[in-house]
Length: 544
Image (cartoon, rainbow, N blue to C red; front, side, top):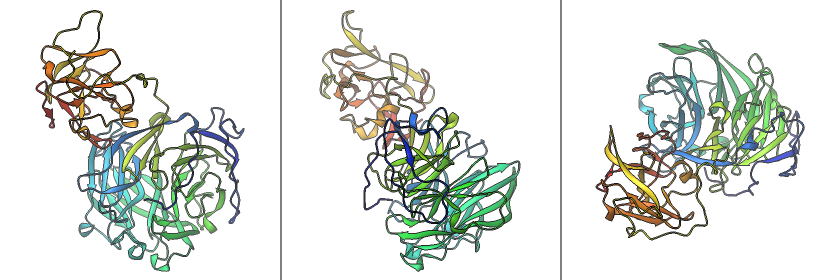
């Protein structure tokens, strides 16, 4: 979802005071925020803003399935294993086809935190079991109900333009990814995002509608979007049943957008006090709907304005942090913003320095609060914002490359003399793939397809997940007897020093291999390409 204007990025994890405004009604003027890296605010919890400790961004995996769908929007953490659903993994919905048409994506992928990607669902509009005006174009609205049922929003177009957008529906999938029902009607008009809370077999599902009145209204701002509360009942073997529908907010502005399809109410998060927070993209506001679980009449203009402007730049995704604060992802720049329930913007963190504006969308808190998983629709990836792990396994960035991609003259099949510094490579037989290369600790070594048998291309965030087998200045590679000395060599590392190669392929370990003898990275597609183990013969193994 590219933007035509790139806004200035704010520095890392700034703690700010006096940003935004609190509990205002109507449309107040934008608040100007003065950011300071050393300023804090008394309104935050004793441990400080949740965002402040997270300064490292790493790519977990590509979210592009085999059919080429792009623009990941929705994301939800799987709570319980059932059918295809695996507890602790993440479901991600795609909004675009590979041709780039917004509102035409049909797939949901499941991604493990280790970066393994599988297709959960591919939804054919022709085989939908109920009404869904316009067909399929999967949005950010993505929730999981008791019994393993998945509800995903559809705001479809025929050509990626708002002029062809239709109201769509909510599509209900079973735990195998099969569409079994739809929820449509007068209250469903462009379901754009969702959040839910379940107790027993009952679920309260909140939906933000972004196209009320239809795209034919034109590009002028229309103040008629809504937030809908749906009560459902479901369970094991019990298909979700709609018990009631209540519009709890109306009069929220939306405007169609060539870059984003639509700017309207998007992210939702339910506070512990029963207040539902809404990211209002047009106007850069966070709205607050009181008594969201029980109210029977709609809050006018979407409720009260909790905060607006400041660091908010077209907020899209939203999630509640463990400290009760509200985290939003900006569509207008590459930042996340943390806001207290009192309306103070207390922290801002750059999450996308590369593609910037328009790339951040859905986000969820990582298990145990150890970061934030978020989708980047500029690169079609799942990323993790977490604490800086730079000190875990670093090499000197000032060391000069030790050689070119040609085999190292010092490589042998026997250990070097005691005075020489060596980095060992040996062989281990694994159940699924046979004999493969491993490092001195027995950890499996992988090749990266984009390296193309010639140079190191996995750097920066990629290298934090797939650490290269480094060769510092003065060191040589030493292979065990099963290896061919002529195939050992090294390539320059763009980040300094060298990386050991075998048969011309740079070698990497994988962070998710926590013990020797594991091959969790085999055949994974992550960080822009596939990862494969390599045999002593020099052949890359692409199966297993």
